[in-house]
Structures are given as C-alpha cells and as structure tokens.
Image 1: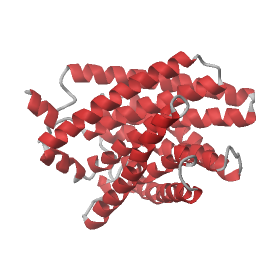
Image 2: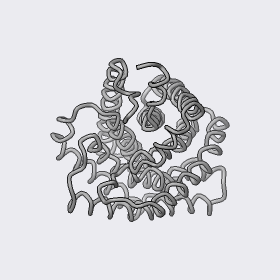
Image 3: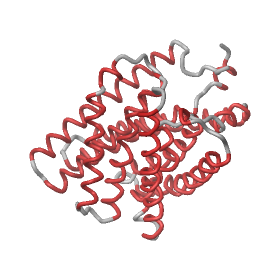
Image 4: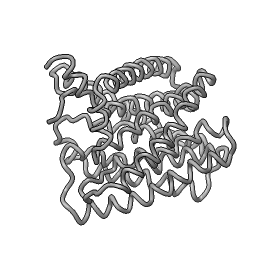
Length: 319
C-alpha cells in the first residue's frame, strides 16, 4: 500500500484515541489533586496527549485537503459520520486536560471546540433527519455528536454566561435519553450488532458519567438527588459491561476498542469527585480501582493499536 492510499484510509475514528488519552490525562490530574498521586503522571500524559492530538488532527486535515471525497464519504456514512464530532470533542477534552496546568491554553482550545461541536451537532442531526436509515445503522457511537454537548460546561462555566452552559448541558442530556431509548430498542428487538461495533457498548457509560461531572461544575460541587441518579446509572452500566466481559474478551482487535477508554476515564473522574464530596474509604478505594482499570485498558488498547498499525491494518481504504 502506498503512502497516498494509506493517507486516504486514515480513519476519522482515530480521534477516539485523543478522547481516550485525554480522559486518562484528566483522570490523573484529578488523582494528583484528590488522591495525592504524583504530578509526574499527569504532566507526562498531558505531553503525550497533546502530541497525539496534533499528529492525528494535522494528518486528518492533510487528508481533507488531498482526498476531500474520502472525508465527504466518511461524513455521509451512517456510523462513521458520528465520529466527525470526535474532532470537536478532542478540542474540548484537551481544554479540560490543560485547565489546571495552563488555563489560558485551555480556554483557547475551548473557544475552538465549543462552537465547532455545536456545528457538528446541527450538521449531524440534519443528516439524520434528511436521510433514510435502518434501525441496524444506529449504535452507541451516535451519542458522540449530540450527547457530547454535556462536556462544554466543564470549562464553559468559567468563560461564558451560565445560561449558555445550561443550554449545552440540557441539549446533551435530553438527546441522551432519546437516543438511549432507541439504542436499547435496537439491541433487544433487532439483529445483534456487528462484532467490530460491540466495544461501542461501553459508550453507554459516558453520558451519565460526564453528565454527573458537568452537573457538579454547573452547581459548584453540589451532590444532590439528580447528580446521584446520573452517577449510579453510570455505575450500573459499568457493572453490566463487567457481566458481559466474556463477549468483549473474545473480540479481535478493531479501532473501535478505543470506545472502552474514554467512558471508563469518565467514570473514574466521576468517582473521584464522589470521593471529594464524601471523603470515605469506599469512594477512595473505588477511585483507586477505577484509575488502575482505566490505566490498564488505555495501555492495552494503545499497545494493540501500535501493533495493528505496524502490520498495516489501520489506514486501510475500504472498498
């Protein structure tokens, strides 16, 4: 395969790598503050996350300039189109990752990511409304463009009017419920999901976990009935994935394995925020366990990705 062919096959789904690394970086930032984990891990991951972000972003922009038809094809695909919004989510997550270390840098990323994500939300929803889909086309990846809006207030509460933060939060939370209902219907009453999409089940953890984090930012650290509902829905979904572990362990590697990473990081961060509020041994131990699990998952998936890339199985042009 020549270089041009490889670049043409550079998948938009690779922005999920940035999402996973950013999630782990943010988790270690919180671990530094709440669990007294050395800052070295946070700073190292922040550098790695930034380098990977720019490598993937610049490469994809070059692909867009050189092979615009290939990018257009991805954005018209019933599954891949949802990953287009992973670009703007990457900006938002990098923003959150930098917020404790370099607030000015973080806000710059946020100003790029927030309006871009709203654009992707409208673009994707327009695509859904104006085109014909089958129920088998939907997967948890559809959460990315619309439910991703709940990330905006995490930094946004400090840089924009409160009403705008609530707008983004409400938009993401509302469509989480709508899409979750459709996805559960699809899972129960229709054909099983393709094996390469099975890892996206983990994305079901992310909306309530990120919703919990965002809600705490909007309410300045409040733990109330609604926030606990969000957290425990995320926790229940995690244990559902644990019960289904044999299904995931039997899967061969696909780039969709990165769907394991960010949701677990989000649950880890949410658990550390629970520890910040309750300061008891259960939330402390849970924070440590989830941090270790997330680290192992991200490390394993990153290793599998490097092996697959070395074998030429990542940037493959699909016929």
